[in-house]
Every structure is written in C-alpha cells, then in structure tokens.
Image 1 (cartoon, rainbow over the protein chains, first blue to last red):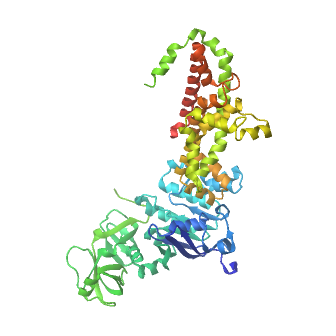
Image 2: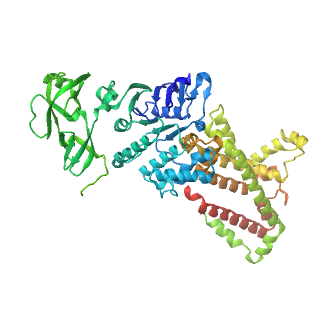
Image 3: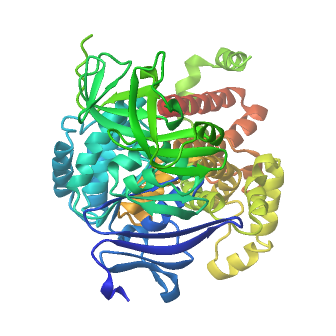
Length: 364
Length: 242
C-alpha cells in the first residue's frame, strides 16, 4: 500500500500507554513542509515523538517515511530507532554530557560506520554552518541555551535524516533570547529539504514556524489547519485560548508601530525596526461610540465574525487590523453587537506585548 | 575518634626492624595473595555484577525484589555465616561442590580460588547496589537519543550508558575491592588459613597477633598504606564527580 505515498512522513497510528492513555494521530507531512503539533502538557506530544522515532512501538496503524514503512504492527513491520532516518532534536536537547560538542555531533556518523576522521570532518563543517565554529572542544555544560540548541540541531542534521523532528525546541531557552532563536530556527528549518515536525505547547512557536498546525488534546487531534485558519476559527476551548494571542508583525519607531497603513502606540519606546506584537483578546475592548479616556489605540471597524463560546463571545474584527477579541456574552448583548455591525476598538498601549523580530538596536 | 586507632598502630611500629619484617615471607606471601585475590574478585564482580545490576534496574520481571534481596544478603549476613554457606554448597561434599569435583576436578575450599569465591560473594553486592542505583538515576532519554542517532544497543551501552554512570561505577569498584581486600570471616571459614595459598593479609594479622606482635603490626601497616594509597589516588582522579 506504500505506492501512493509521497516522499514525506505518513503516519496514522494508535498507541496505548497504561490503562488510561491512548494516542491517536494522523499526520501527513510532504517534504519541505513544517507541521506543528500543538497541545498542552500530557496531551501525548512526547509519546508521538517516541513513536515516530521508534522508541515506542505503536499498537495499530502505520508510520512510513520517504515511502518506506517504519512501523506497521499488522504486517509485523518494525524498524528499530537506530535504523530509522529520523533526526530528532529532543526536549532539553539531551547532549551527551561526557562528550565534547564535536563528539556529540560526530556520534551519529560514528554509529553509522563513518571513520573517525571523516565523522569529525563532517561534524566540523556542520558546526561551521550553524555558526558554532570555535566551540568544538567545549562540553555541553559550557554552552549557552541557544548554542546547545544549535548543537542539538547539528547533531540531528549531520546524519542527513529523512525527517526532522523537534520536540519543544525553544522551551529550555530564556524568554529574552527565544524570539531571536526562533527566527534562527525558522531559517534552519527552511534549509532542511525533508518534512519537518515541531512539537510544542507554545502557540507563538507553532503559528510562526509551521505551515500547518495540528492541535492535540488528550491523545487526539482536535483541529488541523493553517495557523490563520486556527486563529480565525478555533473549534475547541483550548484552541480558542491559544488562538487568543493576536500576533501582529510591524515596524517600530519611538513607541509607534506601523502595521501596513495602520499605526499602533505601544508602551515600549526603545525598540526599533521589525517587532512582534502580542495582544490578548481580553485586553481589547469594544464600544458602540468613540471611547473616551486613556486608551491611545482606538479605531472604527466592523464585526467580521462572531462566535459564542459559553459565557464568552469571540469576535473577529475587520479592516484595518483584523484582531480576535473576547468579551463576555453579557457585554455583547448589552452592546447589541452582531456580524457586520460597526464598532470602536480600544487597546491600552500597556496591554500590548512587544518583542523584537530583528537584531535589537536598543538606544540605551 | 577516627584517628586514634591509627596513631595507636603507628606508635607500636618497630621502625628499626621494619625492613626485615616486611621482607619476611609471611608478609610478602600475604600481600601478594591479598592483591591477587581481591583484584580477581573485583574483576569477577564487574563481569557478573554489572549485567546483574542492569537486569535489576531495567527489566521488570516477577520476583525482582526477591533477587535484589538475595543479591544484597551478603551485605547484612555475618561473613562467617556466608563462609559456612559456601562450604555447604561448594565444599567437597557440598550440594554443587561434589559434582564440580567429579566433573572438573576443581576443589574450591582451602584453595586460592576459594579465597576469590569468598571475596566475590561478600564484596559483589557493593558493586551491584551502586551500579543499579546509578542506572536507575540515569535519564534513559539519553539512550533513546543515542539510538535515534543510529547507535546499536551495544554502542549505546559502551559510549553512553557506561560513561554516564562512570563515577558510580568507579565508586562501586573501589568499595568492592576494599571489601574484598579486608575480607576475613568468609575466607577463613571457606578457604582456611594456609600461608601462600589462602592466608591473606587480614588472616595473617589475626594469626600474628597471637604469636608475633611485631609482624602483626607490620602487616597492619601494609594494609593501611595500600588502602590509603588506593583511596586517595582514586579520589583525586575520579571521585570529584561524586
């Protein structure tokens, strides 16, 4: 049945752990595409990593990569982890603490039969490629979080895998360096020709890195789609919470951020250049008439989509800046809001999160 | 508290006669025998004990707690009882010893190999317990990471598992060797006290205390120096990690 499969990852499997947990997952990732598996802790994300890497055998279904069946219990097919061509960047990176950086990267090549000089040579050139030159002789304990992440990436890429699998690649990093490293990671992901799977609990990561996002809850995928589709039409309360964060890219200068023709005011005065704004939907208020008082960001727009989620109502506003807004259903009724109606949007400058999307040029 | 006995020992050392005493064949025989048997016992403990520790740490099988109890029993048992048990099992008329004698002609009691068996029996639990604990504490995800990079089970063990538990393995080895080096009760019960064949340093000290105090002191001094040299040497190089 493999004939129809493309060169990517095709997985459709079930896996039981203990009596209470069951993971059912269906993934299809063509080469050159990044898919994110986004879900809360305990949803089965790590189990999915183990299954695809071959560290946990599946109970039913099948996993195949580049047209080769890796795991299909019904046909007694199981390729052990060491024979799979899956490059994994593990959560916490799991660099071998007793080996130097270059030994870590050369490990996969040595294990697959390369001679020591050849393995060292190729490991060295991957380290150069990931801008890690000069760190060859360090031990993992002497690396910064960002360096460790790139060493882990080099270790996974050097074996020229057919799939790149990243388990929470940014979770171990400092919040202040995360945005920067996410951008670097996006660049490296783009450079990998095969299918890429990113496992994460962070919606920002999933929405910015992936072409397609699968939301996983309690061992099952509850929604799949492009980041925009999920943001626009979340189908479960969890997805709605995730979609909540409005992510907007703009150009900052002296506390003003240009987003296309629209200008937003933010509290952060010092960032210049490309920035990522995050606005919680509950931090945005809606009014029938021009609001008075402190909010500096106010504009008139229309209600594009309105959706009731129990006590709360989720509203998607229209041009000039589509945002997801969350208000109580009571307030919606009081305002008499409906799709197509005109409203005023107000956001306090202090409620807008700002992080640099380019190399910071702080003027301190 | 810890120093007083050693000061007492040093005070009794007949320094002028020491070279002659140390050159005596009772001392040299006992020292050679002690080193050979304790090191052999340590080697056997590694070959048998490490796989045993791995099985106990990693495999879930019925009766595992019973196995662990049996393995650690020699730790709490008086060595004399251990020696007696070995005699009943491996002696000339023993349960296993009789057929062992008939098939291979090997007689363990009152032989140097008997000393090795007694040492191993008493000392191996130290290695098993230390290594098992280290294997349990090791984050097994590292082994998964190694496998995903293409390492066979053997490569994972050799290049990841064993190096990562290295400090504990060395600590276990030192404890095992030290226990074997100082072993007395099981040895004298099972292997007897024949100079040059089964009389290790502790046995020689015990005999000399009755007859020749100066030799006993010299023997004790040798034991203290060898033990101290090994412990200090290894601590400098290996135990920093602990």
